[in-house]
Amino acid sequence: MNISQILSPELTFCSAKLTSKKKILEKISTEVAQVIGCQEQDVFEALVAREKLGSTSLGNGIAMPHGRAADCSQAVAVFILLDEPIDYDALDGKSVDIIFAIIVPEKATAQQLKYLGTVAKALSEQNLANKIRHAHCNAALFEIIEQATENLY
Figure 1 (tube, rainbow, N blue to C red):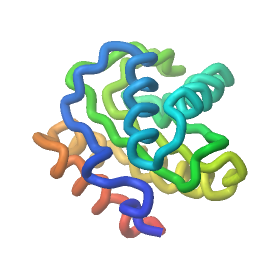
Figure 2 (figure 1 turned 90 degrees about the vertical axis):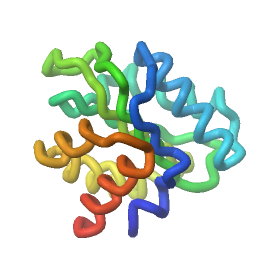
Figure 3 (figure 1 turned 135 degrees about the vertical axis):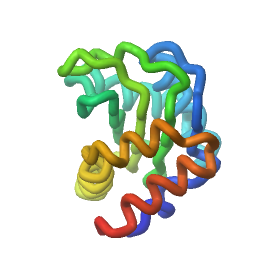
């Protein structure tokens, strides 16, 4: 599996001006719905339901919201670097500025876990987080995560 199977440059956003967890989840829902033709509200509800189970923050300013949507036909990811860190109810208490979201079809549990594990492993490296935080455009941000994950599959 290559990260470009679920993430595209069009779903990569550098310096996004989103000011709350809700706005982030709405942005993810909108983008996913436009790309794969599912219902925006279904994606949003899946993300919110998962967040209610506990924060999807990994710590160190990184969050990985994820969910399974009934009308989602394929796995899709959205990668966001925020302009300013926000409160994300992180267990370590740190604000979040790096968001990697994954939405998968409702019955794709194993697939979701594989994607989450691979990306979480890459993002846990401090060097990568620093590179991401210094990205200057969407294309550069996409290239950073693509290169970081290509050797992990």
